[in-house]
Image (tube, rainbow over all chains, first blue to last red; front, side):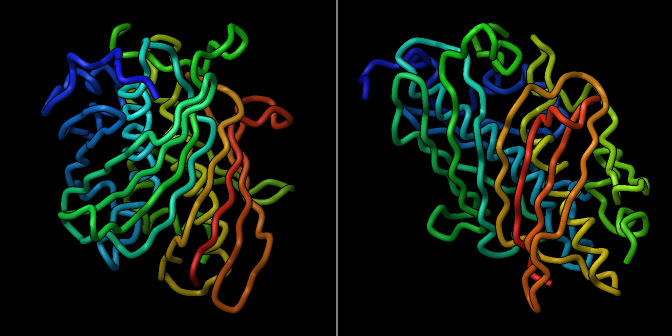
Length: 160
Length: 129
């Protein structure tokens, strides 16, 4: 994998502009924890309206899907040697246990393989430690979409 | 529990403004378009996570029809394939129980915009009853 990264100058903590151009991200209040080579970490602040199981007070799995999708996508951007459009091809989540009620959730993703057209990403979601995740994920992304796939293209940070 | 009733038990469903209706082909769920569910403002397109969440919610509502109390089935895993862009308009979804086991239910779900023959995404998940 390349050692040069298109987003290198954005690497570090709290670069909120990486996600603030995404309307739904702003609606959820997603925060950038930090990004680095092939890695991204985002935080989803706890909000009662995101609960899926009121008895247990657990955030709905789909809200975790959203922050996971965004974190995985950002990890791909943090892997590209040259900025290109990307699109999620598939995403799978395993819910290992219930997320802690009332806690902020952190998603961490690592792009472990980039080919000419496809990026492979794995992720974990946790409250405090990546060693104790409540969810894990696997995702693939199409990189450098064709004109036909143009509507799937994400806005890159540079486009925002 | 019926899907309509189940919706009221899930705050996140209200957050997305999801509705359900009965059709000849079964329960159909509806995700109204709102500007704040956009993931890509340049196109624009609905956030992939919201499409995935809508699929999972549709699957869950179908699974809840199998249980007779207000306990929400626990998701074990969920997998989404993104097939087409989800544009700035209403999205519909329909789920199908593939296997209703003693403890686990497997649910397949599809989402489309306008033309049901051209799904924007499909998903499959397992839920613990």
